[in-house]
Length: 445
Image (cartoon, rainbow, N blue to C red; front, side, top):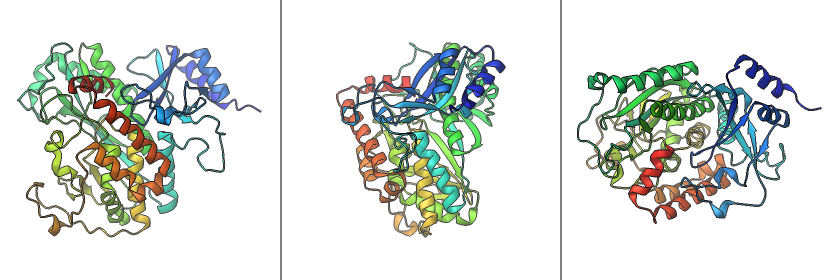
């Protein structure tokens, strides 16, 4: 007998939201690009009845690069299926005639359940994260929460010089409030998110340069946090455009200089008694986690000079110069991630590394850094700092491929396919100018 519950759920949603005429079915691929199908009500109800719908390729999760070229080595015969998670169905408060539902992707020819334990969802980012959240609960009794700080640049299209940033800084500076137009954009973003039950804690200008702002969000379960990061990206970019601005979360929006926008995750565990083990696990796999958290082809030795201290496998009590800032035992701000990351894969890697540390009772040998960290002067031996996140994406990918902890937790195929996709992007980018790369990444992120 067919399962009618999804149809009833969707019909109830339509009945309660008569202005919604279309639904956006969203898959976030490994490159953190939103792949979207928009369907009217009748077609949406049919998907609810069928349980899924076909894509145009396989393997969909890794089949396209961030530059919208085919990742030919990953493609195979058949078409994957998109499987909506109807619990995520909500009105697009930034475009109220549309609703949005987050989806999983199941590979071609795979049944919903199989003996290989992934049911065809082995490369699906949402499914990968859900599996790690469940493992943390079942294996070590930890409920994980993730808070977010999202940085973005607001600019007027056609009037901004992206060859270099302006020289003035504006960290927490009230001068931005003098610009009524800019304040209206930020207020509208906050109010639009509130209509979607996303209540931001605050917004403020960031110190990297004029027009760069940050919104801080409360903690959510990891899957909801990742969904929220995507919803915020869509909201910020849509609302900004409505006001005549463009918004981008591109890590390096300018072609020169060290302006680096982050998307930082604050990760907490429910039982702080195991906090040091979790932290030790994250630091032990920091280079591999960094490949997921910092996946842009723009990142290099020169571009990352402004955050070099945060590349060291270091931590400190409320020390913002470290890769990991401990706010309290069991709550850490991961200060090395940016908005080019796929949040599902990045959170999954952070959790996997931390949980592995708990399972192995990995000793925390790295000492807390008691001062602002200067990577050129720090005494690594005294602090027990033995590793770092490589500056080049290729080197980060190499470290990820060799990380046995992440390989055991996420699966060698996940790591291999992610590495292959990113290496394909590196090859494509080698034939592009910095201007061309920036224009593409500013559009997507």
